[in-house]
Image (cartoon, rainbow, N blue to C red; front, top):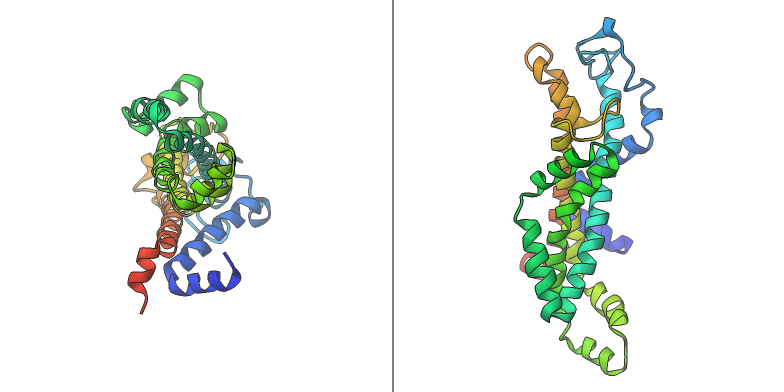
Length: 283
């Protein structure tokens, strides 16, 4: 996207600007966490437990005296790492599976789209992730693999549909008549023409990954302690919902704003990249 087109996009999508700013804040917090806060997110201080937000502790402290602000800042590392990793793994598998199914069709399509995809979709994704993590144990790598286990199907079906609609186009037939290999046709002629809807799906998929990570951490199946995670912070705050509501409010807001930023950016990209929507909104 050129600089001029990016400026037009941001001018036409004010919500996207807000989403990008929100996401930028989380990315900066994840990268510069030790600079933003000097508090150790795992340091215990029982004498300072359940302090309300103030100058000493911007977001207050939890039941073990840990600084909530530092835990939220360091927790953004886990959430963003899971979001980008899950989408990267799911998208890679989905591109291969969907590309092969859509390009070759026949038994390849039946095997990948009918049998494998339907078998994965037969179980809810979150239940499959819970079973996977419960079997292998909590951990960042296991969490990413668990969420990718069912996440690739949506990308595979999207890529399959896009490839099937493009594989019979004239420029693909021309490349085939000139002796181009199947791999070259897929990489040089088909993939660039399906990248726009894939980017939109990936952006929205990151929001789902953040929410799924928070859910698994809330259930105790995320990254183990003492690592700070927004979901585990919400789980720890359940017993202090009324006497220390700040323990719930700030992690919940962090999850909400992170998911909202990805969703807003995904919706704005969809509106910007879809030619039918652009024509309908044109003066």
